[in-house]
Length: 211
Image (cartoon, rainbow, N blue to C red):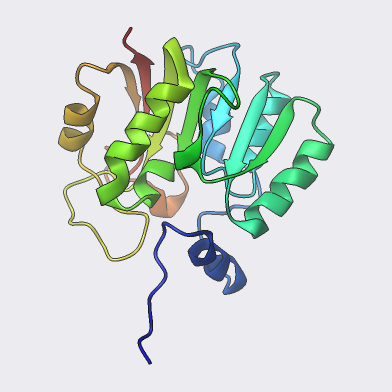
């Protein structure tokens, strides 16, 4: 019998990681670097927020508690169950169970802000164009993309997510479609996401969609 390996393209892959306790990205609380970013002068004060690949929704909840209207998306049942519970106690948080690549503004709306934490690094590198295209169609003109990119560096792609990406590749992908407004090295990265010299295995990129 031929055994077909699961890939990050299907929800069963992520469900397997949750079931086996390998959901190392899930801190059980909002990302400290995001909470710190909320205090940064470059962080948008208002606006609707889309959180694709939201996981169990701790960061989406943090945006909602800050006062934003938030739509959080995940296609994995374990993640979505948590998202739904959080949405029941947060009136401005909506949980959506779908593949983020299928998001369409005709069915939802466009957003002022897209928050991507590890989502871009977690999709297979061969689908990165699709991810950028989704951001563009779901983001309002002059809207902000806030991307937490990790691992950021020159190491080769691994066999499992999150997959590394270089600053040069990001700059090439964003040229002509996003203005890079800020690049921030978080002060509160958790230990295994911080560069040894604080120059960054993880960076926050604040980008504005070019009209």
